[in-house]
Image (cartoon, rainbow, N blue to C red; front, side):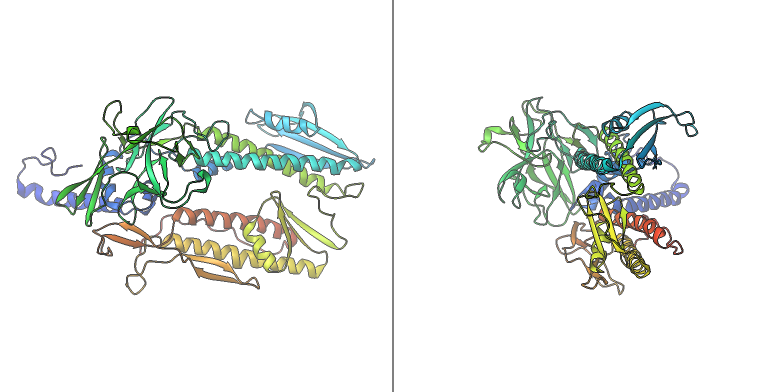
Length: 570
């Protein structure tokens, strides 16, 4: 907004309006400064964006369009949507020794087709409607009776179905994350090294260095050519090779050249001058830099490459082995429309549809886990043999604690504490001697994991999150905060170490800590990663706490505190 426009300054007496105008300017300046320094704008900027470019976005933020949610956000919504129970499972053993399973399938959401199909595939028989359904819920009853020698085969079928759902769930998660990133669709048949030419969705981002390509028709696409910084194994491309992108989220690298994280743009674009305060990419492809606050310098013009054949993985693409200058195009020339600055092209895949698929997959997984848990409570296999995961039955004098989830952080620590633990097929099995000493040792080891490992990880994640923008130490000396990590010693002791990765660089010439070339060294902390690590540790904490409650009901472990997402900036 141009505050110096005649539309905003009216001819009132100076003595009346001078002080209110000064106050208004101060308030707007402080609000703009607070907005420009918002660390959570990382999701819009990408690495290397100048904070100053955010000033150009301010007039556009009133648009009703917004960037789509990130992959983790969509996945989290899918998990929350699957929280409602889908079935009530009961198991009993009649006098004849057979196991009888009864599943009351809840249909409150009006859609339980997939769960019904799953039960029928496992051999259940559909009975009539439940004569006494739960309040506000309709229900159908499914039953199955198994002789003792049939239980092992039944559990094998349950486990096979669970393995299938785990694989399908991972595939859906991958597609969700692809649908939430700028770029092209994957092939609809799942061939990841083939391009789908289906038009993507144009989404407003408002960032002046985001560009969407003009439409080139249904059987061809326009790409930005880049020179790879390093080899890219999925496409079998070496460092220095040419690749192509449509995800037009651009930034200047440490050497001052415009590009994407995988490499600089190919062409004759010039280097970013020192003391640059703003950058503009215009619809005709011209790139201009404001040097200080005095003059604009043109760095060149973006080149586009017209491809009819390409292979890629949704992010990077490889074109024909040979292409010539005739394939190059300039925006707003000839048959091309202008670049859409401030917009991004996202895959046409509907992330919400994928989210619904993932929710249904999670519901089916929970139903299978429920069946597996009840099958284990009605006695042994009847005919000896092995358990569904091909491991021997519990040894005499041994007790097993089974948790239907992978716990990578806890398992690593328990192994270091010399606890017998195994994790595979989406479950964690903790074994210990079935006596007082064995139980006490298991309780002590699990308590260590909870209090010394997982809680410490959550504390370190919060500390990293809070210091993600700190450029000076406690004494005021120029020293960016270095990310902390939790590691395990040989004897299972918890050690806090520092992450040796490089600090981030931001082009911010006006910052008090900027170097001679205008770059500011920032902490090597990504707040999105810290939030994800915090939630992973908190989830394992809750699962282990529930397991400990069965072993030692007199122990009390509090609920982990939620992560504080509004830290006070240092």
